[in-house]
Image (cartoon, rainbow, N blue to C red; front, side, top):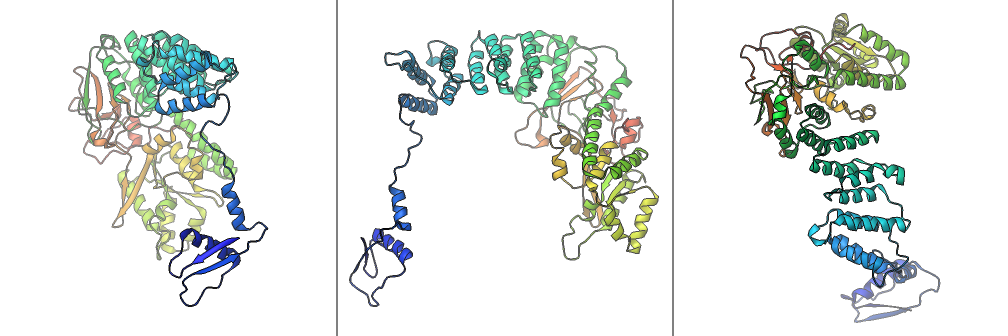
Length: 599
């Protein structure tokens, strides 16, 4: 039976909700037209299950409680360990664990879940040592031994946590390394970067360079690459050992791994370059042309031929001007590109993908044509420019915008034509207009146009051309769609894009080109042997960034010399810079791009 009550203006909330549910289930019930004082109706509910009855039954069904550890012989221990983990109380957690394992009420068949063993080890790795009579490593060893005895297989996280605790023991570095080095053979677990980091940190504290190098060798064998904290550790142990060759090696590994360095790494570098060993390192004579060629081949960021000159270093923290001039030694920093080997690999990667997805004969024909036409300094993404901001009623494919970009590029390159890449279907439509036809024929006559065939994606064509010719690419395309996702795993794609892409806009019909940055915020080694290291800037404001300028004392740029960026003269077209040509310093802003033709 159910009871519904109404009083005209007010009713009990619970009864009203019940009545509403019945109304929805069985339809409306009669109410007095005039305001009644009380209406009570008895309703007999059907014995069959109804939506309301089902809902009521569901609310009365006992629910399983979660997060309380459940029932069983280890439930109290599990709840206590979970509570200690939340509070970060490693000492209390171990007291409970030890009592359960070896106390008077110890459970002979005690076995924790794998994640609880991991919780204990993780707690011990960050424990306050003052809370323990001995080092937490002893407690961690007990937990790990019990885990093995209980038949619970350790994971990589288990062994990494144990290694972290053991490595913090002044005498535990070797044991920690053995744990990590044997985890694959003993437990079938592959070590990760986080597995090696505490071991390297331990050898950094002990100053044992040979063992730190052994850790790095094991990392390489496991296909694990060190990052800044690990490289800083290797740099410091090398510096303490006075091994100038190793310091030089790790300087370049650091250069490839990071953009800007942390304050901690900065202090490591300052310590090395101010040392007597650093002052002694270097050669008094070298082949200057070989150094310049190496810098060009390496993308203008370094030569990697060893320490140049000898004598004490001058180390100072400076700022860099907007044009890339160092506030310390007055050297002009470079806009760093990927090196020649990476360029070739990148071009081959794009070519391979294009040949898979395009008609092979069409793209192969384009490659052959490009091999015979290497003179271009800039490639133009025609469709991207012609369709720029054309999403309005009268908008369309603006050949005028494209012509404005071509004109601006010719002005920058003393009349030299860029290469415009357009799809065949665009050209066919444009040729219907006589004025368009004249412009297109002019481009063709001057070798400034390549038409990608029907059924092709012209993105492959302009991207491959820009990489293959090592030149600039004029486009606002952010290169994030499906074809570029295929290249996303390439470590040098982003770096290449930063160096080569030229964005654009228009001001009263005139093209405004936004050239790549005049210099790169990354570690650079110059042709004179100096180093420039950008320090991490929290604000993100490049103008406020502090750099380490590291130069041999007394070395400054002569006033009559053209500014150089790691051996590449600035203010030149890319091909002129590659050929060593010069021109007046008051020329237009430098155009960075092509270094030299690919071999």
